[in-house]
Each structure stands twice: as C-alpha cells, then as structure tokens.
Length: 217
Image (cartoon, rainbow, N blue to C red; front, side):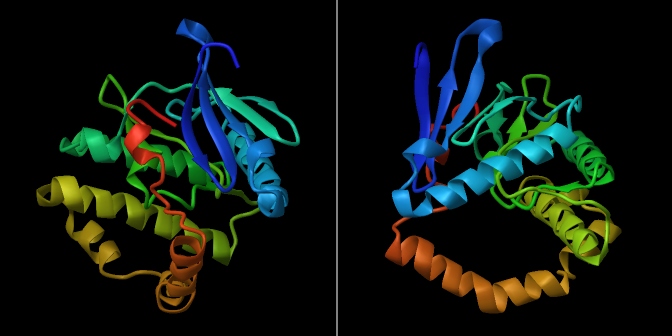
C-alpha cells in the first residue's frame, strides 16, 4: 500500500491511513482479521458502509468511497481525537449535538460515541464523528432506535461533563442522571461478560490503537 501508515490492528483487521494531500484516505481491511472472526469483520464493514452512505454529504462525517467484501475506503478527516484535544468550549458540544441530530434524522445511530477517539476536534474547532462500525441505519425510528439515539446523546453529554461541566444545562444534567432501560440492562448483564471475553480472554481493549490516532483513525 503506497504512502500508507498503519493506524490500528486488532482482531477485526487493520486500519490504514493511505495517500497524501487531497488523496488521503482511510482504509479498513477485514481480510487481515482473525480467521474465526472474519465473517463478523465483514459484517461490520457492511454496517459502516450503510451508515456512511445514508449520511453522504454531511459535514463532519467521513464520505464512503469504496466498499468490497474485505475492504472499506472512506475519506480522511483531519482532526485531533477528543482525548487529546479535550474541547472545553461549549460551542463544540452544541455543534456536536446538532451533528448528532442530523445523524438521527437520517435514521442512523452511531452506537459508539462513548469512546473519545471516535469524536474529533477539527482544525476549525468543529466536531466530527468517525468509526461507524457499530452504527445502525434503521428503516424507521421505532422504540429501539429512539433508545439508542438517547444513548448517543447521553454519551456526548458525558464528554461534556468531563471537559465542560460548568456549561451543562439542567435538562442535560437530567438526561445524564437517567440512563435508558437498555443502558441499565447493558451495564448490569451484558457489559461484565463483554469485558471478560474481550479483555481477559482475547486481550483486546476498546481503546486499542487510540494512542496512535494523533490525527484520526
């Protein structure tokens, strides 16, 4: 892969930053995933492709360029991951909430905004979202969609509480204090099992590769 830099490697494959200048791309390669997980890595590629296609044209969202069975290519968004940029301007969170509303109006939930590396601070201080592997493009906004959309917002507000807590509104504090039934069920039943399998048995962490995402992944 010419002019390429490996950003991340895990059980589900590799993520590369390819090209230079205006030709920069992010390439997700599922062909290098563990053999017994390759089917799932391919499903995640298709999931990301459907979400990005539905969000085509939105500022702050990568553009889908190519999708194959084992490879997804999307546009490169320059920016600093949230855990490095640590945005403290309340305008960042207002604009991020606006971007999130646009996602939801397009029937897409991100489902992975709890991870700070998935939110970028761009050079103009505006927000961007990346890594749509777990995103869901729904046919309609039913009860499950609304619950997941609510959790997208709660995760964004958790970040605001971390870096900009003094600007939380009363309504935002109420949302933070009231996780959805889905979130409560995840925390008490699914998450402990998930952490045991991924971290203890597989040796994989959600933030793997985050330290290398100086610009984006």
